[in-house]
Amino acid sequence: MWPVQTEYILKLRDYRQANYYSLVQRYRLAFLITVPAIFLGFGFLLTQTLGILSFPLAIYVGAACLIWLLLVAAKVEKGIRLYMRSPDCLLGRTFRVIFRPAEVKIVVEEKKIFVTHRYDRLAAVFELSGLYMIYVDGQQTYLVSKEGLSEDEKSLLRGCFAQVLGDRFVSRFYKK
Image (cartoon, rainbow, N blue to C red; front, top):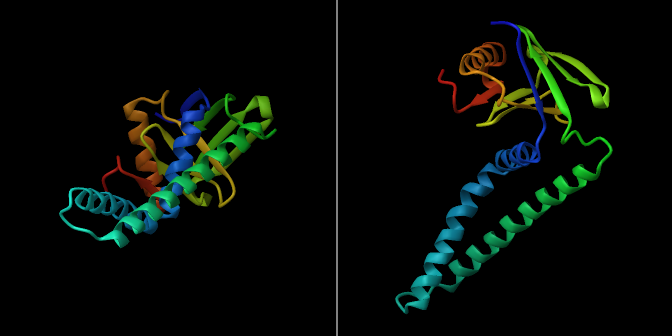
């Protein structure tokens, strides 16, 4: 089955999905606290409105958490808009990706990008529902769409990533 090849155009929805996934991973603990606090705040607002129970502090905490969540989302959207205006923007570009047993080759001819990375030297690979996020390091990430891949090819890649990267491969589709 090797090599596994795919060609795709990087879409805004894929870039947005990757950004929000990274956001949630970065602030995982904050989200675990914030989301229940928002629901509790709304719950106490409802009980106060119905005259059952009054606990204004919980309402204020829930409102503050909601505002924080909206500000963080706005920051992500601003970053996406800035990236879209950047001369380095790869959205709408055609990617050709060739996976081999020990390495991945990524080609974006329009931007003169021709890179090859060994799996054992990657920082991490995250598998989302529609794409792979291949982290070369903390500053460089490639988004590889799974649209053109068969189920057998996806399974082959999962096994390879899991074997080579170990805990640096994260997927909810792969069972250890």
